Image (cartoon, rainbow, N blue to C red):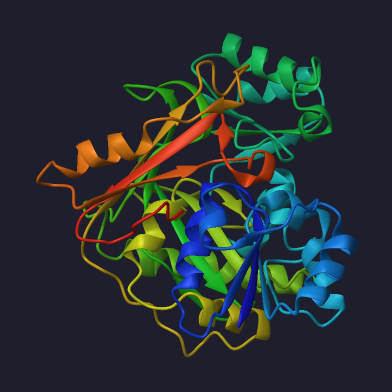
Length: 402
């Protein structure tokens, strides 16, 4: 089998590493990849947002399965172009990817499906949004409707802070068109949980849950980010939380998406809040999450390539993953200022030495560092603004495995 992974981050490194474990995989490719991925796959410098060029490349390379990592190409319709040519693809269509591409549409889908989620309304002007703030209690949650690289969510302690967030989106246009519409919703109290589910549009197969941390600073303070770290498993959660989430949330949403003419085939990621009343949806993503992927896949003790192909072909039902009992944790090292203005292009040094020092600790069996973004000239170095390290017990990764 020849597999192409689309994307160039740590998430795609983890996917490439895991897919390459399948003994039937004889060649891995990545677009654009990064310096770490280049050690296990051939990296091609093609624009992932150019669907026609990507589809031509896929045909030329004789790819048996394309796995799309980031949300951008999915929302832009890359999966549609590949599927229209009969090329197997893991990732939802443009219509189905709206579950992440539009938070307002996602709320509508959830309400129609009857799944538990926060009370919310959608707005395009500050005045009417401010009126709604009076109907719900603080803290307030303000979300840019479109894609904002995981940074378009504000948790506002009071009305003054909420109005500033609304003005950033609707007046100052911080997120451009992605913030021209906002969702204002009530704050859910509980504990967050990230749950990935593979689906072929009918069957739903949950993976091991994880918990991530999005605030930039220690003590759960600072602005929201795309994720500053994660761990798996999450043993203190209710024993039935996964089964209940699949039954009460994922399966109804997958059915509703098909009713909407947007059958979802790929990875549906639920950002959940486990409340006193049970799990409720914070948001959906149309792809694997980052950094949770880096702690979920190393714990997977069964193949990933075959169930991914089954999602594309519509026959996922027979599959059931196996899991290692050991724990896995990832910590993000970010350039100063992240997620606001921050410097990029910094060379990562000392990775092997840091990993060696950590591995001498009795509780940590192995450590890997995953470059987040770019391959330099001739692919010799990764120069990035973000780095992640993963340590986990009794799980061999060797070189970066993200």
